[in-house]
Image (cartoon, rainbow, N blue to C red; front, side):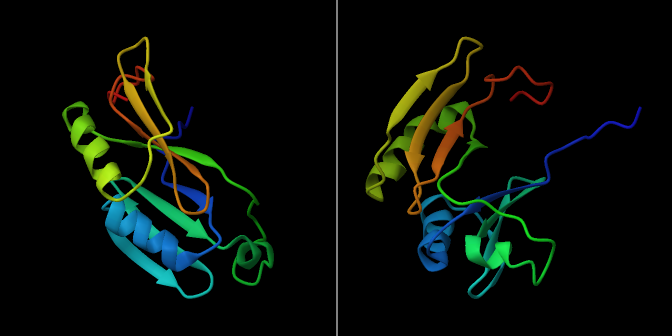
Length: 136
């Protein structure tokens, strides 16, 4: 059987591309891969994934690709090394980003939850949460 090997890209929907770009590039430190004014901005996540941030009304039109999209806040998790958890707490605080919740998982991972400027729930998670072969 052919098996899907990896999640390559995930999308979130935002109401202000400039604010989103600043947050994900400057606060979270993700490398910017590209952007299209009034439509989208793309960030590299690790070595294997891309985070796509869209204005919802631009993707619902279907002028570029098949219509797709969502409205309202979503959720996704970004993996971090366990030893960087404290430095991430400090970094978020220094940028004025409140941590809404912290969770220690039974399998050993730990999560920090906070919101991006559009209200999406972002989670920073350490290895061990899902017991995957990759460590996550």
